[in-house]
Structure formats: structure tokens, C-alpha cells
Length: 184
Image (cartoon, rainbow, N blue to C red; front, side, top):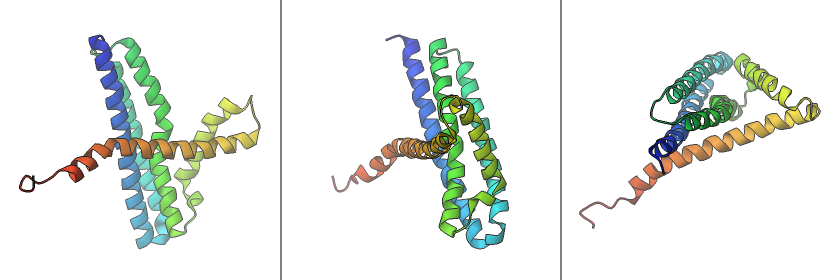
């Protein structure tokens, strides 16, 4: 195995860890903020949801661009690893951006609110549909676009949850598995 291959594998592994941490953090923070706001001031839930989603989505997009940019301009890995990282990062972009939106959906569901009144949520759905529609328009009917959207939501949720669990599992087992030195 070459030195470039080892560094490239680390690049992809580290990128996956960063993705998991960003997904989990954006989901958790958005859920807590939107849910707390929903409980305190239900009438302004949509305004708060819109503000939180804008901040979360912009922050995630900037972090994604910085991550990909640092990988592409790195001198330590080969061009193939840079391309691999960029392709994987691109594949993970929509699931990453879905995390705060999903948190807003969960918070709205927990409070009995209707998330469709959120302008940012509606725009997110529209833009994702605009991305997915050309991919499926020539092959399928409109029903598949709804199925793709629902499938995207499920897959993005599963990917984010699994990535987060993989990322935090060593921390959990490390804390739970330690035996105090006085009992050993």
C-alpha cells in the first residue's frame, strides 16, 4: 500500500466522521431550538423555524465547501483520492442538508404544528424536487418523484443516524466500558 493510499483512505474516513458529526449536531441543535421555541411561543414557530433553518443550511453548505476545498487543494493525497472524496461528499450533501430540515419536521410533529407553513421548508422541498425531477423525468411519471422524495427522506435519515451512531459509538463504549482502577 502506498503512502498516498493510506492518506487518501484517512481523508475519506475523516470526511465521513466530519459528515456524521455535522449531521448529528445540526439535527440535534435544530431539534432543540425549534422544539423549545414551539413550546414557548407556538405562534412564532414558523418564523423561528425559518431563521434556524437558514442558519443551519448556510452553515452546513459553507462547511461542506470548506471540507471539499481543503481536500481538493491538499498536497498529501493523489488526484484519485481527491476525486473519490469529492464524489462521496457530493453524494452526502443532500442527506447532510436534510438533517436540520428533518429536525424541524420532527419538532413540528411533536407539537402538532404543520411544517408546510415554513417558507424555508417549502423552498427546500422545491429545490430538491428541481434536482430530482430532471434525473427521473425521462424515465418515470410524477408518482415516482413523490416516491423519490419519500425515499430520499428515509435514506437521508438512515444515513445520518447510522453515521452519527458509528461516530459516537466508540465514545459511548469507552465511557461505559471503563472500570475504575480501585475495583480492578
